[in-house]
Amino acid sequence: MSAKVGDDSYEIAVLSFNEAVAVDVISSGYSTTTVFELQRREHESGVTWELTARELPHHFTKRYDNGDLKSMIESYADTTRTEDISFLAARRNGAVAGMLAYQRLQWNDSLWLLDIRVREQERRSGAGTSLVRALQFSCSLRGYRGISVETQINNYPAIQFYLRQGFQIVGFTLYTNDDLRDQDVACFLFWRAGQ
Image 1 (cartoon, rainbow, N blue to C red):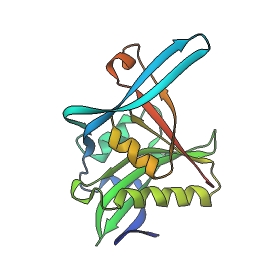
Image 2 (image 1 turned 90 degrees about the horizontal axis):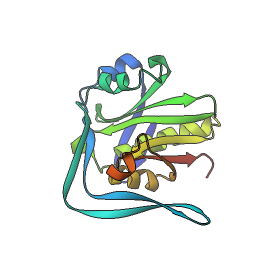
Image 3 (image 1 turned 90 degrees about the vertical axis):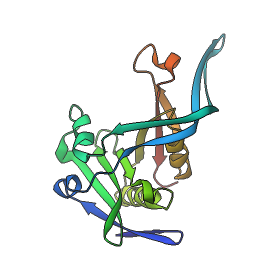
């Protein structure tokens, strides 16, 4: 399978678990000067949630893990069986530029995009877009409802990336009572197949 975006083309390959964990480290994280803020307002007729972009006075950088795919997989061990995770790789000239991990959710007949990471020198060159488009194509081909993904509201680059790929923001989760105060809120996006 191959995907082409702009002038750069990537070969998209399905990887086995062993092939995926053998790929050299690809760091997972982002840097931004813009974040989203989520506000909740109660009023007589209900509750309103508002997501607003805000410029930061400095760069905000976050690293999720050391880039070792085994560490990422272990973080899902309590909810996902290793054998249920599938992998796609974007290759250019034989070298892996980026990877995507996902699983099928049988209960709602959709895919869950667990992780996507692209080498820093390959970012903004189409590797991530090629991976997501390949997953969208596979999702549609198999007749699944769509693709879900979770990120954080402070990961403005990721949210903008998913919006450009046709995803829509569908909800938020506050895991603790302090999450809204700290603006550490999970943001869920969904891409509906057939759109």
